[in-house]
Length: 182
Image: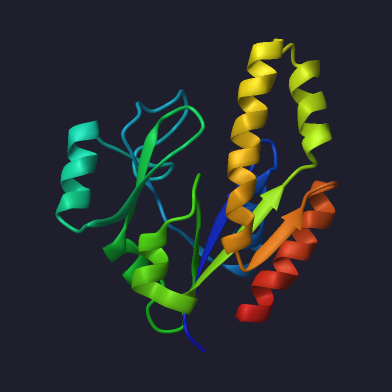
């Protein structure tokens, strides 16, 4: 058995972070902490939630080969993944997980089939309804749905695609998927 990196990708409002954290806790997976060029939000802890660095430092780490990729989330914030942290986390038979906004070709190029991408999503109409219920304007709806559609194109490159209608059921489904690799 080889260590794996479970990379959770998905649309907004798909609960992918909650799903990933719950499955990881249940199965004893280590979290890979992303690098981010944004400022910490209230309650976030450096090194636990993310490694917070300047945009210039993020680019320098990428150019030095320390970060595999730089990706951007829906709000235009940049993130990176440490190659060394992934190597250490999946050494031997250990496995880890990460939640990322976009697929990272660099991770797959470096670690091949040891990277298992899990795409989670909510139904587009349900997503639209959540946004409208929260008071989104027509322009905001159009923008967010365009991002949803772009994100959904990532599903074709993922080993597993899971629709989240009921989060507890989805957690069980994803837990079974991940456990089958361990």
